[in-house]
Image 1 (cartoon, rainbow, N blue to C red):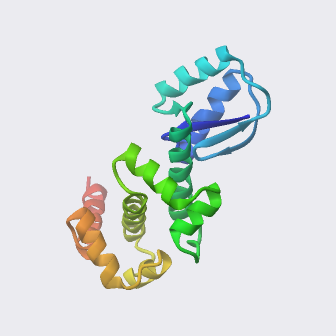
Image 2: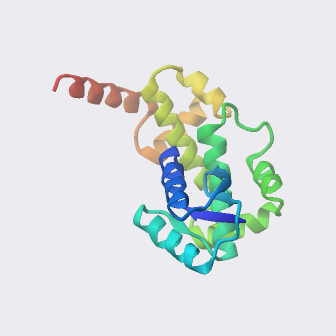
Length: 186
């Protein structure tokens, strides 16, 4: 039985879900971002307890099909951008549609209707978060980051970064270094 969980976006979230399942005596086959496959059937009482306990941790057990589809879409995007070593070679829209086995236009319409932003805007927001992370790690050049995240050019990445954050990537990186040195001097 598959359970879909909203706001499950990190390894810490996965650990919390694992603990809650163990408390209820439930065993899982797989535990991924946004989805858990449980070995046994869950009683209504167990489902309600899990729902309440997850809510205390800031997570939400989903019931309706649209919410589940949106969470699946978000999980694929987060996984693709933040946890994969390499982004897919095909268009993101084709990749997402293929992974979920749905028409992309349908997915896009539902996503926009419920989230108030497009899938593309969600992808851009996640890519910019990844750029921030990579800039702060200071292991890759902007050119390497641009290539890794499939931007057509460094200028395109820089423009998109500035549009989203209000800062240039180099200024953001400088702020990060300044913040880090301030923390080290405490």
